[in-house]
Amino acid sequence: MNNRKWVATAATALAMTALPISALAADTPLRLGVVAPLTGDLQSYGVPGLNGSRLAVDEINAAGGVMGSPIAINSGDTQTLPQPGVAAAQKLVNANRVVGLVGAMSSGVTIPIALSVSKANKVPQISGASTSPKITDLDDGDYLFRTIPSDAFQGVALAKVVRDAGVDKVGVIYVNNDYGDGLQAAFKDAFEAAGGSVVGSAAYEQKQSSYQAEISQAYGDGSTQSMVLMGYPENGQTILRQSLEGAKFDRFFFSDGMKSTDLVENLGAQYLDGSLGTVPQTEEGGPAVKHFQSAYRKAYGELPPQPYIDTSYDAIYLLALAAQKAGNTTDGSKIRDALRDVAGPPGTKVYPGEWSKALKLLENGEDIDYVGAAGAEDFDANGDVAGSYAKWTIAEGKIKTVEIFTPEKP
Image 1 (cartoon, rainbow, N blue to C red):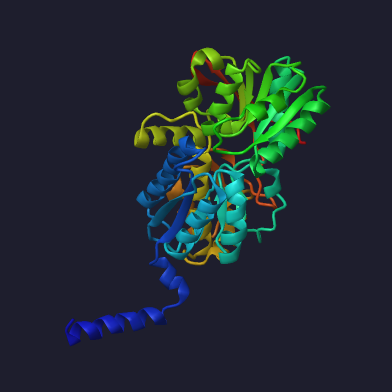
Image 2 (cartoon, rainbow, N blue to C red; image 1 turned 90 degrees about the horizontal axis):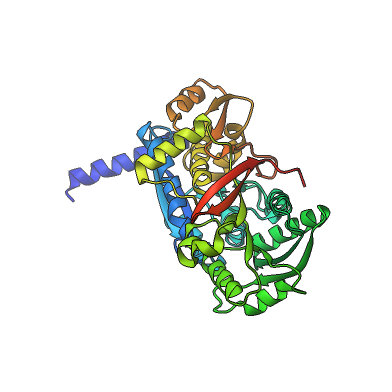
């Protein structure tokens, strides 16, 4: 480098250091990270969820970005396990310098990330899939939010679906992590309150070759052939296959984590047709849902039946709106502090795809209320949201929504 170029470069650097932080932020991309299960038990959800996040980024950048700069997004593979998930989040924060995180999907991964990465580095984290009731009172420094309701509600919803199907006795098998443990407890309380009984219950560990012991434990006294399975598709398939082979269970009810076309493709519709499940889902037909579905199909083709795509999309929008509201793309704590301001009332409602409208409102000092693809995202004091649920079924080898309902408050 010649002396003239060196002097010019040095002068530019000195000038930048003299600028106030707010001015620097205006020229700095909003760096966001997505921790997703690209491998492991929730692999079938990872790429669609990541695509939901990317879709939101593309829309926002096309409409002017945040504070005039584009969003820069990086992703990391959690492998659906706590240790790799924490490592992926640490890399995003320390190496990629992200100031906001979307994810993880599994509560058992989300919680350790929140405690050891997000809270420690003052980086707001929004999970679009983690539903454990433990998250509500987690000591996360108010850095963990979620765009999906707690399983305290899904337990009630799933119990209602089982009882409405005329089943009063079930065996329960659940993944041994924060997600499974919280959901099975909520389900058991609601199911027994509705007059049902759990004849046997067993927690399972991921990545085992055999689950015969857990199946036998859940089978109990053999008074029911109905199983409630709260887990993830990869090992869930093994449990279902071994249940059918052992002739212990032949009727199945699933939590949201089991809503995957992989089940039908790998096990066969003849064994699963008639199965029922629950998943958080908003009412169809509103402007937010219509825009999201149309935009996703245009960008990626068919919209998969897997959950957590719209909630991941909403998480990006909320972080971007909060950064714009805070007037800062580099300070995670300021973005965190603005999240509730943009997520709920009062304010003018802003829907997916309306980034330009949001910018004008915020520039004029007006309040906004983001209504997302997954429904209202009104964060309460714990960073939780309320929500409705879909009752879904497997019919003729396809996953179909039966109805959408709001369960009673637990």
